[in-house]
Structures are given as C-alpha cells and as structure tokens.
Length: 179
Ligand code: 5GP
Ligand code: MG
Image (cartoon, rainbow, N blue to C red; front, top):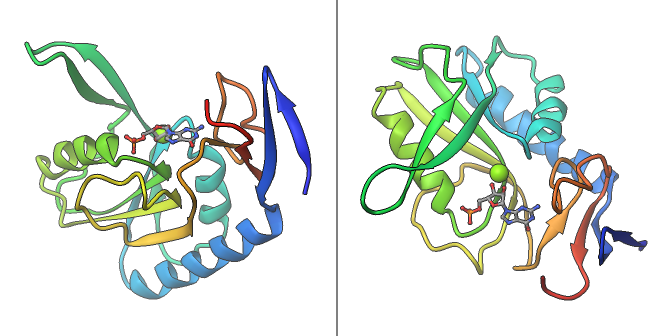
C-alpha cells in the first residue's frame, strides 16, 4: 500500500496493476468468446478510458475495430446541458458496439451516451467498465463487463485524473478524505 500526494490531496493504493491486469484478462476472454464470429466496434470514451482500452484491445483475438469518442457538454436546451458525441466517424448502424468507460459512477453520463448511440440503430450495444461504484449508481442500464466494483470514493490512476493529473499512474488509488 502506497500513499501518494497529487496536487493537494492524499491517495492510497486501491488496486494494483497486477490485479487490474488479471481482471482485464478475464473480461477479454469473455469478449473473445461472446463475439467469436463477430466484428465488434469498440467505442472507448475519452479521456479516462484510453489506458483501459489499450490494455483490453491488446488481449482481443477476434476481428475487431476501435474508434475513440468524447462527450461534449454545451448549454443548448432550456434544461441546460446537452451532450453531443465527438468523433463518431465510423458508422454504427447495424454494428455490434461495445462502449468502454473508465468508471460508472451515478451513470448519468453513460445513460445519455447510450440513448444517443441507440438513435443510430446499431445491431447491439454492450458496455464494459473498468470501475463501477454500485453505491452511487442511480440508473438501470446493464453493465455487461465490469472489472471491479469499488466503494463510492474518488479514485485516480490507470487513466483517471484529479484535475488533469494522475492519469499516468499504473495502479488505481482512492482519496484519503472525500473531496
Ligand atoms: P457519472 O455520470 O457516472 O456520475 O460519472 C461520469 C464521469 O465522471 C466518469 O466518466 C468519470 O469521468 C467521472 N468520474 C466519476 N467518478 C470518478 C472518480 O472516482 N474519479 C475520477 N477521476 N473520475 C470520476
Ligand atoms: Mg469518463
């Protein structure tokens, strides 16, 4: 267990790189089986999922493609924030889609994204998440492949940031006191 300081906060090791690798092995194997004769299109959500996407993708033995997307929020409707997807250049119509997310917290971001993707009529959509916080989750969509259920505390590392920092850490760390 290591204690580190990033900017003005202390964090402690939650998941080691070996533990993470083991879980990515497990879900890669499941995906290789489930999509054996298919050609799924992976859509990792930037920025946080770049490292998860890279590690998972290296373990795939099926025919597969990848295209990174990013969510942009802007003030549009009277309700305030509207999200749009940047980078959805590949056609997802009739494709088997696997969305990759670093972390599912409340689930708000992902439910907006899933709704938008569904409007393009893919033949299927599944979701893979490195981390999932069951105690914070407020939605009802299914997470098909999860590496870890974690406590409802702020985490960094393995692609996840605190104010832009910490994405390069190879372990995942959780904050010592809540933000
Ligand atoms: P949600 O909409 O599910 O509440 O969370 C959406 C986004 O918030 C995630 O994709 C992620 O970018 C960010 N997020 C949620 N929890 C954490 C966390 O513990 N650490 C970091 N670094 N980002 C988080
Ligand atoms: Mg994210």
